[in-house]
Length: 288
Image (cartoon, rainbow, N blue to C red; front, side):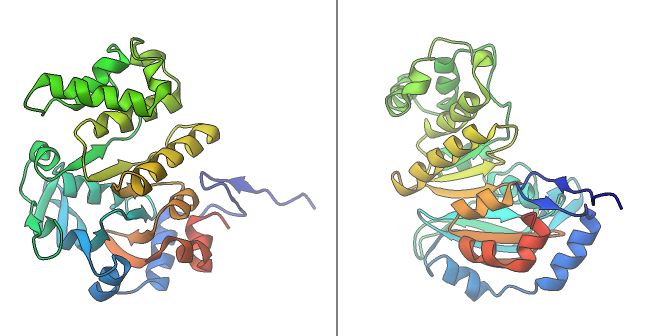
């Protein structure tokens, strides 16, 4: 008898069979259930800084998110995982204003002083609410220098000199970029481009970072570097991080909180390390 074939996925584990997204959705719904708002608040230390309340959102007239609730405290990190099409990136898009919010709210602030920012434009969310969106790979301007890319990150500042001052702080923090400041972005390695994308978002000194697929397209050594950078931004600079990550194991290892999305709804929520140990989550999303 021939040896059983195995396939290896992006999660770093190996699986005997490849199951369809439909099958994952069905099984995830079966193991999940309604997640109480009180439980989400508890995960956010009962002091959330960013809150989504019964959010319905999507693209055009198509609703992708069906009543999503979310709560993350200052200086916390949240990783969204789930099958393709579950609505993970749609949550980040809804927070930042890249799609249509049909109902529900996005609120940001401390304690009882939260501000409803649902209808603010993406520019105002960056400038006034301190929310920055770090896009998936290949969002740098390849024909511009590293320095010019950073200046573009401060395009909303009232004075161009402020963007240049912020860029110098980035160069002080990341000598690897400083050594390349006059090089065109197109000559950077994949890891350096990702560092530039993250750094460009820091020019506006945001409080909240929305990070879409930080590991996408990167070699393993650069993936570790990127997560080290994000760890530093959270724990040493106090940034609040909401992340979508297809490498579910890496994302849950990093994050304080994990949410599992299925078909635009929240199926499971818990501490990241607990979701890593959940055998059902492991079987469906961690390759083991």
